Amino acid sequence: MEYQKSNNCEIEVSMDDEIKRRISQHPCYSKDAQHKYGRIHLAVAPKCNIQCNYCDRKFDCVNESRPGVTSQVLTPQEALEKTKQVLREYPFIKVIGIAGPGDPLANDETFDTLELIRKEFPDVTFCLSTNGLALPEKMPDLLNVGINTLTVTMNAIDPEIEAQLIDYVTYKGKVYRGVEAAEILIKNQLEGIRLAVEAGIVLKVNTVLVPGINDQHILEVARKISELGVYIMNVMPLICQAKFADMVPPTPAERKAVQDLCEPYVLQMRHCRQCRSDAFGLIGQDMSQMSEKRRNVIKSKMNEDGNA
Image 1 (tube, rainbow, N blue to C red):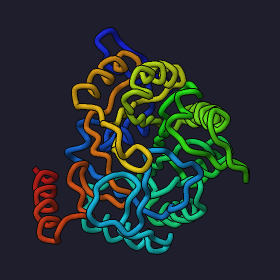
Image 2 (cartoon, rainbow, N blue to C red; image 1 turned 120 degrees about the horizontal axis):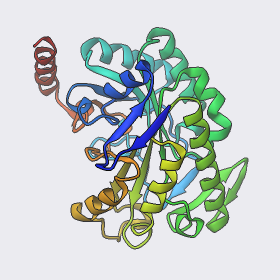
Image 3 (cartoon, helix red, strand yellow; image 1 turned 90 degrees about the vertical axis):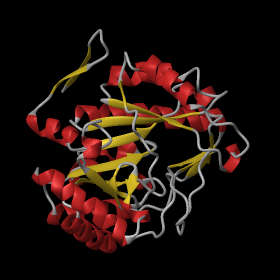
């Protein structure tokens, strides 16, 4: 699988038909797919192995729309039942993902859930979002449950910068802080990305844009992940909370400027809405937060468009 950049920044991809299908039906990976196909996030992974300075996880949250929150943490069996119901009612949903509210690779329930769902729905696209700390050691498990697409949140490749973004990492039973923690995290992220690309998984990298810390460094991240074969990059604006509650988020213009700098190296996702860990439906139209009446309106419209 090869990703090549042309002079006009378009991405020309040499890949097999199955990978093309995954991308064409994944609303995060294709700007065209976002209006046609949906995804469901299953909130089965509450534990996390790192603490980012901008992260505030909540497990019973109904009034916020952002990563790290869910109205309920599901068991694997509950996640399977929810998947059955959602796919039955909303057939335009083509991607089943696990994105928290913690790190999926730090929770055995992630793999139990995906194994259950794979038996029922072997042809869906499986997606997972991780900080990448445990990615190298968990790669065999990911391949075993059939992960097709993968997102790694990577905010820096310089440990001095990364150390300003995280409080600590917990790795192999030990807590690390500062530059030492950042070095471990970055090393595992890069190795995990390399292994995933080699295995044929389509990769997206999420990078949180934090003014004054990594805003001048994200271009270097883009260059590096391009070398590794990452398909698409998502530069996300900082949500000011937790230890970064008093910081100032980047403006849309500042975010666009960073995306424009990175575009020659790796395709940019520009339609992210920083979804909840239990979101489902189209991007920007989270059905988990909608009334039944509003859901029915969207379902009717999608059915009409599908039959047009």
